[in-house]
Image (tube, rainbow, N blue to C red; front, side, top):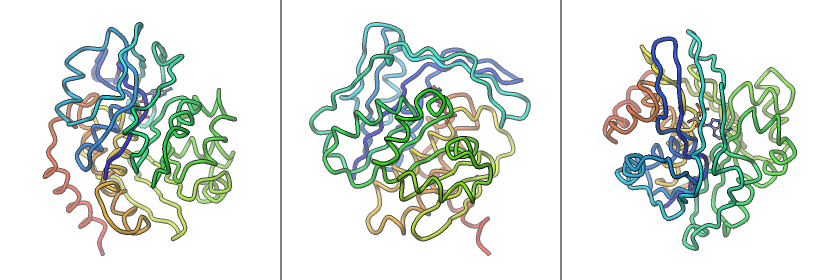
Length: 299
Ligand code: AMP
């Protein structure tokens, strides 16, 4: 089955202690949709400006993304710049320029409104809600968010949480959302806000799923070298949703495997800047790492 991804289609300028890369292809929707495309037909909704390089549109095309919902608007593409410390778990946003997404309010192509899987990747919560309102009875709706939206648009995030099946967020955002630092204690409080499933990302320490069947704890794929973790969270949720869309049978049964597939897809994202490594990966590489990770956690 098919998947719709909405989020940012961005240019990212990323600084690590070892290198600096300006104006790379980035954005929550770019990372998530490319990751999902390994598993299922993926449709992209987003907006880019006049400065968005043609080569990045071609990259989307090479990944088979349906681009009918990608608007090119007068103005500047969303631009994010960030800097990592030596410990790559610590990142600082240097600048966010909303550009063309500031007043963006997409009308979905008619065919998109009937897609069964919807990923509301990180973008303004009102915009996520606006896209969700146009969908006709989607089977599974997942949303991601970030500290910025919890700071400046908390009521809109809370409104959205009542309308989705699953929330994906990182540990510090979970703590911020319910003012509880202990993740295990935070989870039931997040469920009370709406979502039946909650997935907390813990970077190099993996992810925790909480749902009606209890907790599932997954490690990250162990990497010797992390070059740039930007987009890993988006690749994780994209891979997870793509995998889910590709599977038959019960959601509860497939979600655990989906987390492992999302984890492995995200591991490639960390191995080079932006989408450089992910775009070189083949489905067989992902399957191989999934087998390795499965072996590492079996006992
Ligand atoms: P992640 O590393 O998974 O948190 O995602 C990083 C990606 O999120 C980058 O490619 C950015 O372009 C994008 N991003 C940064 N800030 C925002 C924001 N406020 N809303 C949506 N996407 C963002």
